[in-house]
Length: 238
Image (cartoon, rainbow, N blue to C red; front, side):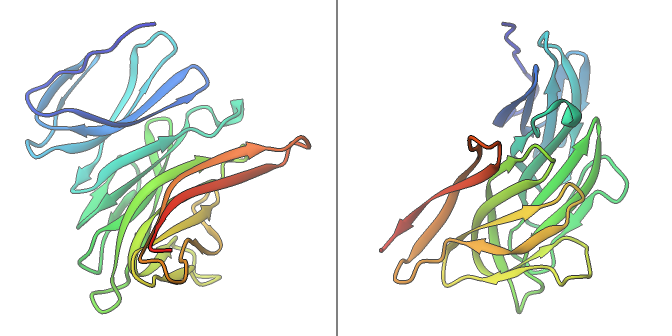
């Protein structure tokens, strides 16, 4: 198998890697100028998030840079031939982040870190959904930790929050789901391929515990072909 070596002027990092068919998906951060054949990028010296796709032969076929202070922390490509070229990334942002695509930007409004989910088709971002507080008086500090995809293009994302979070999916009806933590709690949300949130925010709030997290999510099929998602996390204090 080919081995790719990425080098640039600054610190280049890979935060997560995933497979989709014969392709490899990567997300991370690039700082400064980097020559990643056949792409040459001039990222900010402080670093910018990236989303990359390597083809079956190992060649780098796609490299997208995000702007702002957002981070890209994990990536998933939904299974199935009809989903080839579709990918979702999750990350955390303090002020704002944007990716190549019409209206594909998100700005926080509460002064704390928010989470975000972005859907990509080919080299274009189709939408971003924010997960965070409404304003400074109703803030939520959010860290995104995990994402898993179903065959139909739906996804389940998870993370850790402290405060009153809202899934800012852009759909007025029904009202976007929300969840107020009892300290530091884990949460998970199911989203459609169009970015609409399904149902309430699932949570890992456990009575008597002082710290709960959602650390990983995966999707499994039963013998009948039905899909189920499994959430794993940590609880401290109970």
